[in-house]
Amino acid sequence: MYKLMTPQEAVELINDGDCICVNSFVGIENPVELHEAIYDRFKETGSPSHLTMVSSAGFGLWDENRNAESYIREGAVDKLICGHFGAMLSTKKLVLEDRFEAYNLPLGCISHAIRAQAGGIPGALSKVGLDIFVDPRREGPGINNISKDENLVKLVEVDGEEFLYYQLPKIDVALIKGTAADRRGNISFDDMYMSGDALSICQAAKANGGKVIVQVDKLVRKPARPRNAIIPGCLVDAIVVVEQEPLGSGYEALTGSFEIPSGQWDLWVEIIDRLSASERKNSVVADIIGRRAAQELHEDDIVNIGIGIPESISRYAKQTGMLNKITLTVESGGVGGFPASGPVFGAMIGAASVYDMANQFDLYDNGGLDICFMGALEVDQYGNVNSHKACGAYSGIGGFANITAKTPVVVFCLSFTAKGLFVEEEDGKVKIIQEGHIPKFVENVSTKSFSARRALENGQRVLYVTERCVFELTPDGIKLKEVYPGIEKERDILSQLPFSVE
Image 1: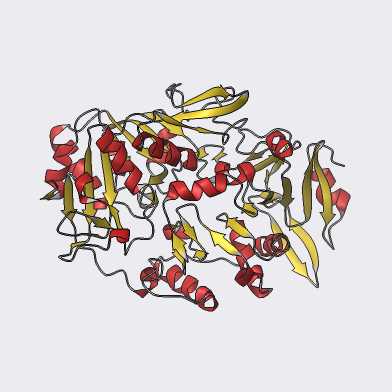
Image 2: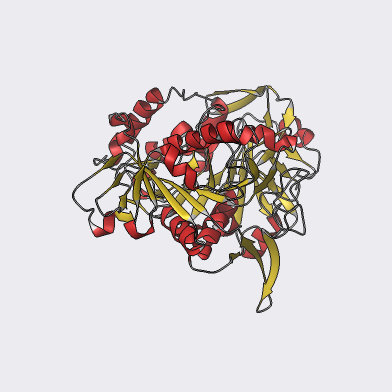
């Protein structure tokens, strides 16, 4: 039977050495007060210590002094296993300083491994990750010099086929943020952007004899409708009520509280950008890439669009009317709306459906998308891509590996160079005014997020769209497919490459 507790009382349920699984998505749906209560307890008593933290998509607030950042920085955590570190500003720096063990696994593979543990199965089999950095034959999932755990990812063979076997430590504590708890302890997520892995995390913790701690905004007397109760009360040990300030209509638009027709998506994007203090920059480079990449969309496509330059694709899809003829998806579970970006990435404007994250990655892993548009940090002569690790910086693979592993058409959207690139476009002609200092096309990528060899074996069509040309993946490597008007092929493309192309 659950008990109502303060944040301070609830975190007393956490023991030294526990494995805590957090149901957050990058920067959203964090049980902030629970994290901060853990820090307060650790600061006062030195406990809980030697923690292992697991999260499919990471957990942060884009603020290095809030959420879990402080107790991670102060030494309460020995091991961190995440799909993405982007919103954890302090932690992602400490990872590279060997302050604690840190592992990066594909987001969907963590989600599926949690679900497997919920069912009493030690881990999950997947084709995702073969021949990229996480494959133990290559680098493995360890990010820094002290991360040597070989149990997280293993190469196995089943019926003559290769798979990776993802196995997480046993989850002792579920840390969840929900909307409301009814008098039976059932937890609903009505005003949340997503439910993520919430149910699977709770089931896994209880299967291991652990504890489930849920922070909610309110208590309600009327029992939740059965289909709306994501977590049944019988699984919950502690409910912590922390009344939240009103979100405002901009953020409520992301919870499905009211219907948003597709014709109003642009308006709500602007409203949310103003609320989150983010600024949408007009970029000639992104505009050129987005306009060309959008030409690859077809009616009835099911689509995933990555963050950064790929986001410009939706603007041109709207101009052509294609946006109303396709179905967009986001990794956190949203289908049929318009993905938000910035601090609220993972939420969706006008979603038709939001289901559990593991189910979304079932769709991605089985090739259920028709096309995806992803960013890239590096592309090599063979067509391999590095999207997750820059020199001296680390954000993580996120859902990238799952999304690109089997989608029939993969379009990488990237500038030809970075840091200083200046481009003009006039009368349909592109002119390179100044090259960037960092080349994006290299002989060999420094780490592999996408395997060209696997893509060719899978029969995937792969394009690399830049602001001056388009390359296509072939069995002989990348081939120059298009050169834009105004671009001189030899000067602006071939002489800038460290390898020859057909």
